[in-house]
Image 1 (cartoon, rainbow, N blue to C red):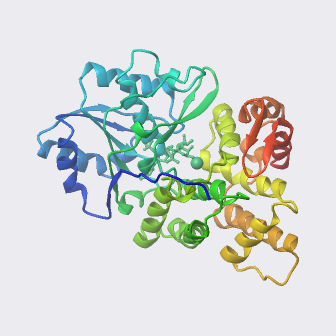
Image 2: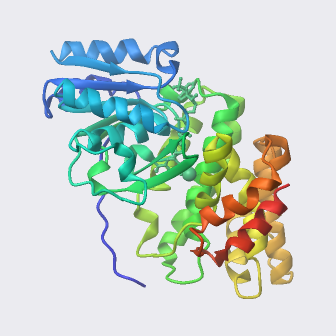
Length: 389
Ligand code: NZQ
Ligand code: ZN
């Protein structure tokens, strides 16, 4: 087992009626707040009015940037960074899902640089030495952006979607109130569910450096998702279901489960190429890819991990061959994603075309090897894409 550093400095207010702490938390960073949000769901659910009331009660000055897109665009980040500089912003308040929070993270970093914010993502990999403090109010359980140091931004001109992780981007404070997710549609709930599952799978499916305690923890997170996602889809205002999903979304990616594992992720780099070109929902792309990736990686070398997964998570009968157990585990995941959650199951259904496979695959592995569960080269990724048709 490798040594590791565990440091998650985000303060979390979890549960209902915590918003009266918002003014106090924002005030510690200064007086001038940039409130960022997406296409308006926060107004429909009445959250906008509550947030404005708390900000005003604390005597703070508020500026706004709305319209942050799903798969957030670099243009929104540019605009936000500009506002931060022009208005001398002290703290950013992101209210929304992963897209709003991700875009806000890079506005916070962009406030301190003169170069284009896309340089954080392109081959220049401009350093992030500083960022304004970020406070979040999460409205969709999925990405874990509320408690992690990463973000993913799309550039429509170059058809790129790139992630960047930097500890300066970690939110200082996050408000996680499950009631703010009651209005999330069944479709977005399903996509968010597929996303958090994938965050766990990317770490769990690994042939070395396992820490038993963390494997058990991950299996618990997966079981929690499988239990509560269908309930949240049928009963959108079921507090227990929404609360469980919300806390899983944060813990699936806040670094805790890594515990020294140093393997790279597989499905995420592949998916980012799909949403870069086709602008599809991140969780949907992951749902289509995940079972095919699992099938592709299954071999005599990797089968033991699948057996552990299938027996511990789904209680598959151990009195069978390892391969049979592994296959049943994959079938269970397919059934969950495509039947229980009702997500589309093929590239064809979402309009992804074969002619894009070679360059998407090449970009996903950066022309070399994607060193995940098993190493994947361009030809492997193209095969996985073909399995998705
Ligand atoms: O824009 P609004 O009007 O707010 O509507 C949003 C959007 O249309 C809506 N929504 C959010 N909260 C709602 C709601 N609708 C009703 N009621 C509510 N309470 O849902 C739609 C999707 O929102 P979005 O923020 O795009 O979803 P999500 O949280 O899934 O974020 C996806 C983005 O995060 C990136 C993805 O690649 C994608 O760009 N990721 C970020 C990660 C990170 N920071 O660590 C990791 C992930 O793997 C992922 O890559
Ligand atoms: Zn994800």
